[in-house]
Length: 130
View 1: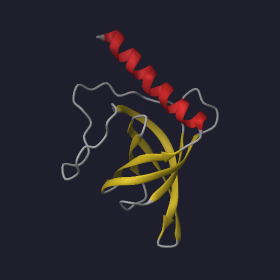
View 2: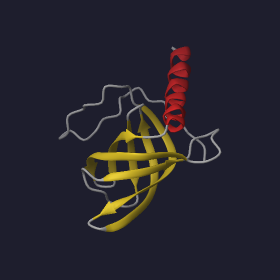
View 3: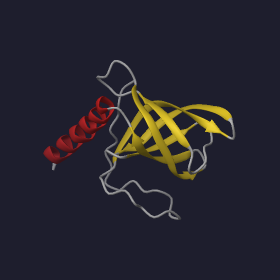
View 4: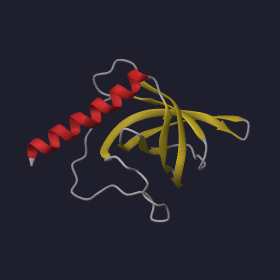
């Protein structure tokens, strides 16, 4: 799967009823992912699209409904990375229909570095266009 950086002059926002607590820049993106977690004792598995990402959080549009506070594992298809990047632990911070945001609570150093690289790479390309 290819990462498509969406060029936009308007910021990406979370739903209006939630305070924007993200302290790092969000980068609009379109890349596939699979997510899984437990919902009332039942395994939930879904797939979807990363709509934006930062070093600590990810915006997602998925095919399975999740609940605020759920813990999820994420498997993100980043370009140039042979295997999906595994984010072992993330927590759903907001939900609006099939759109939701997660805060990364724990991931392997390699996964963190892959996300940082893609965020940094986008920032570098964006600033060189200005």
